[in-house]
Amino acid sequence: MTSVRRLLNLWDQFEAQVGGLFLFISVLLVFLLIVLRSLSIGVSGLYEIATFCMIFSVMLTASLGIKRNIHVRIDILSNVVPATVGFALEIGAMLIVLIVAAYLSYSGYLLVEESLLLGDSTLGTIRVPMWIPQLIMPIGSALMTLRTIERLHFILSGGPRLLQSASSEAHVL
Image (cartoon, helix red, strand yellow):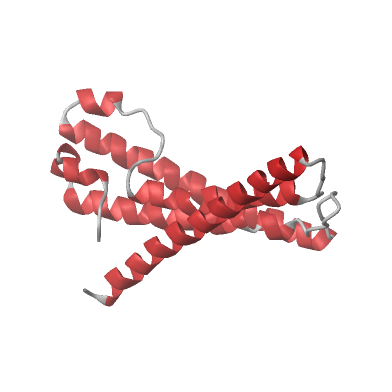
């Protein structure tokens, strides 16, 4: 196994594991909130932290959806047209995803920079600087941008015949 493949495998594992950890923490916090509320105990700030963890989980694992080609899409058109047209549609869709992900990365960076400049923080009992939860936006979007480039490379290296085979749904470099 080459060092690039090892690095990509580590990247996959990191996203899946850390994304899963944030999801677990979010579910645990919501469960804790429900149990405490049934005991008439209120803990301020847990809901916000659970929400931040859920957003972190989604943003970290969204790029895996791009790599595995399991993202939300309507593929009825690409299933009825010839393979070369379907190939062109796939390339076009991936280019749109690339533009959107790159723009989200840039705008997320600007958002974090503005929050740092203004010193924004949450309004709850637990005062969290807003740049911390907002930091996932440029990070997650940058990961999606990189995964889209990886997916485009995979598609372009295989050509139209790739899209006809069932193995194209999830690629492994």
